[in-house]
Image (cartoon, rainbow, N blue to C red; front, top):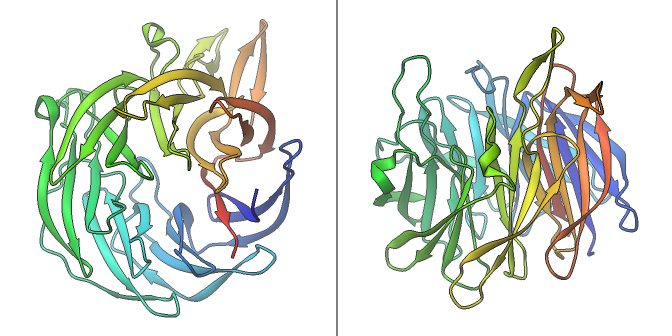
Length: 383
């Protein structure tokens, strides 16, 4: 693997790790305290800068302090805050840049919104580029720029019916993107958006194909990127045992292997049941699913689900060479194992990616999350 740095955040504590390529072990090297809890991070296309979207809010908590920060990646991989944090109007759930890192794009989900900031030549964060008003539905979860750098995709998850509230439908919003300005082009709402809860997408590196993780239905979907986006042409389960669905089973992140032959999706769960008066994990799937990609049609086929040995895999990352995968296990839970209650801490699970795309588990590095969450993990290429 080319030189790369591993980062993970528990709340505002943002740690740098070294990764042993032979056995998958991790060693914490440095840490930085952010102005608020990390929500998501994104590396500049060419400069040693990591952009961090931060908030003191979280799921079910709007929070009161929200920022985007520029972090200098120093030669040893440690991070240093560059300039002042830029205040934001609400909790950002995702951040990205365009393909040349001239703009930062942020998505918000309470309420659904987006914003774009210009990036200065030195990589610092510039002024906000005002956008038209968009009606984005319930619970936007990601904003990404397609490989052509002229199209932006915004998945809007919607919400399941709960406590007498009807289902809020999901959608994928498609925008044209020119010099920092968005123009709405298309809205994808299969079945009028009902039973369709899109979370994240990723793009094939060489084909006009897009893959979607559908959070609320535990599925992967496939779309073709022509002048308009067409699909979903396939929707398939990400679970090893969809017939055993348990409460709080959700899909998380999605990433395509750099060689374009495989796509990976995280299955995350943290639901509990009562056991002799104690709350224990309900046994749902916390796995990474591997799909092979048909080189002619783009169809994904499930070839493996690999246990992460942890709870609620919100994010994971693949190194730039495509040889290693690290999954972030967000929460700690007690679980019933062989008749005894055992504590399963949060942590980072490392895997080797085999030639056939399947994952070989290496190690889990336990992280004490306490009442917080391990919200993001990333493998970032060095310069």
